[in-house]
Length: 105
Image (tube, rainbow, N blue to C red):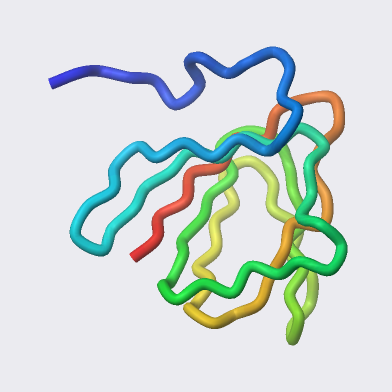
């Protein structure tokens, strides 16, 4: 067993949004995502084949949906995004990291 910390080893400079797998096996993926002012490209949409549960552990973000209202997530807020729901990150805080935990199932 190896102990880790979700807030450890966050680079001070993040040029692109950072995606790191924590666990990935048998149709389950848990990943840490770190944003710092990053957004999804203007005309790009995530349209995943599996459900995704996300929680913002630190920071803030706004998720934009193609067919629903935008949702602002603050520390502790979580959301389940069903497979096939087109979404994108339209805003994250510029001057601090937004740390997400995402579970794809």
